[in-house]
Image 1 (tube, rainbow, N blue to C red):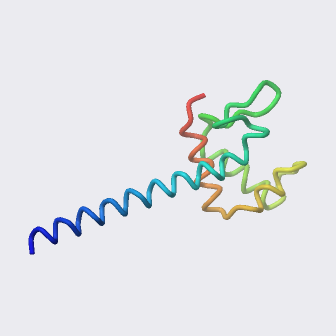
Image 2 (cartoon, helix red, strand yellow; image 1 turned 90 degrees about the horizontal axis):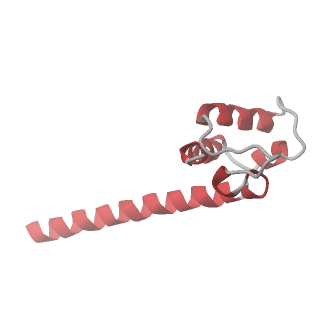
Length: 100
């Protein structure tokens, strides 16, 4: 009985790790949509805004402002509407965690 409990616990840990990795991968996929303008992992070329290492709360507020129409944009208001507020929070946290 003890052995089966250990195996169940180990299996549960493996599933949790796999689920966490899948979530990280999903966030990277969402963030990759930003690469055309903001560069790979948020490191933009000169002339565009870099996102890597920026304050996540400030980025999230900008994204929510684009989404609501409070901040005018050419494309960002359309792009931001494609994500839930939680997804935007995860994307901005991803970029904030990247090194400049």
